[in-house]
Length: 150
Image (cartoon, rainbow, N blue to C red):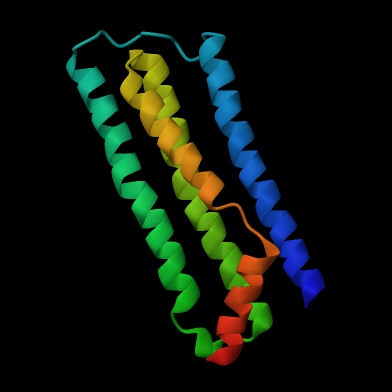
């Protein structure tokens, strides 16, 4: 079982690194002006909507990602064996990471389009939360102990 836990941990770490690389790639695209810098006029309705969407994605997405993961990895553990539990853990980790990735990448794109710091701050929040999601063998082992206790 330790081998499977280590494999899952390495897979989850690789997925987080891929998300970080996507964020860095989006920043590089913005810096190279492939994402048009300042295309949206300051104080326009487009800037308002882009900033509002970035804020909403961050404010709703971050707690939602964490809560969905917690609910779906603690609920219904009685009916899972260790293999199913590891699959469920991986799926919900990927969902959590996907929500955070969408929030971060959209916020970076909004930042470059508007050159408003709102998008940059929202992206920073989403990326910092991915650090909280960094997996460890201990987290996965304690999760499996919960499965075995039920």
